[in-house]
Amino acid sequence: MSATYNFCAGPAMLPQVVMQKAQSELLDWNGLGTSVMEISHRSKEFIALTEQAEVDLRELMSIPSNYHLLFMHGGGRGQFSAVVNNFLGDKGKALYLVSGSWSKAAVEEAVKLTSKDQIESINIVKNDNGINTVVIPELSGKGDEYRYLHYCPNETVDGIEIFDDIDSPWPIIADMSSNIMSREIDVSKFGLIYAGAQKNIGPSGLSIVIVRDDMLTLPSLPQSSIMDYRLAVKHGSMYNTPPTFAWYLAAEVFTWLKSVGGVSGMAKVNLDKAKLLYDFIDSSDFYSNAVAVQNRSVMNVTFYLKDETLNAEFVSQAKTAGLVALKGHRSVGGMRASIYNAMPIEGVEKLVEFMKGFADKSAT
Ligand SMILES: *Cc1c(COP(=O)(O)O)cnc(C)c1O
Image (tube, rainbow, N blue to C red; front, side, top):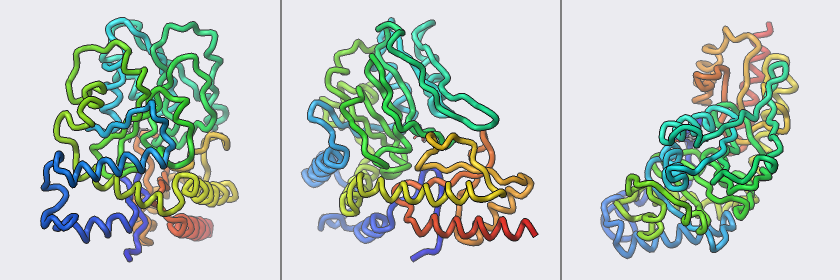
């Protein structure tokens, strides 16, 4: 076993057993004498894989039967444009809640694709004395002119997570790229959920879309066929050749997740991991976190060193200790430990031990 723990925000580490299985069957999958990457996506073996993946993900997330499950190209950002092109037509309006970098990027893409006044956005993060808190405004008074409300329940860059349900009079679209399957959610509260795969699902390039069937009656615009939800539904996510290897690995991740207690089992471990790290940060004068306790991300723990001139030294010594990819996103600085489903608690324990040692050394 390698001694490295990878805290990369994405593409992120995958469960070791999944990688080992992929390695063992790389050249000969299912007794076919070829890899899963080298067979037709329409072969009966691959179709069987996709059917099992669908059963597993539906079970893992308790997805109701009036929702379609799509495996699409283009990662998270691909869906920024897909939701606009599929649901807004040339007159529809949408409301975007902005809580950090990714929800802001979703707004920018939506504005680019629409005409004046179709996109409205509200900043929902208040900064008080350096601490970021999510404050969701009362939405029911805003009338009923929006086709959907878009938000990002977990801001990967900023380490801000929204745990409360949003009370919205309009269908909710959620970008769950970095917290899908990290805890239980009630899918029936959403019109559409999407997630780029490379944080909690599998390799990059793939995105998972869970869409309620009535959403597909909203007027769409002429658009790229590969991003058209209706075509994707009609063709079982195979309008064109899907990212088959990513789909295969995602299927293996679903199998793994079921074997370790499903989403509810994983959620408990995730809370333990996050608590370990945040409790340590709070107990230390050397490290700090800038997010209100109730909005601290369970998946992406951002933190700062009191003496920021030590940042490079921290990253470098951590790497030597086998703890890699801890540098924060360039837009916010500091550090970030992404502790997705695949990160074992031992990795977080080792990180805390390292952080303690680094702080003690630096204090003397
Ligand atoms: C990573 C991420 C994205 C972008 O995913 P890409 O696959 O790079 O397009 C979008 N939203 C969130 C919340 C993310 O974490």
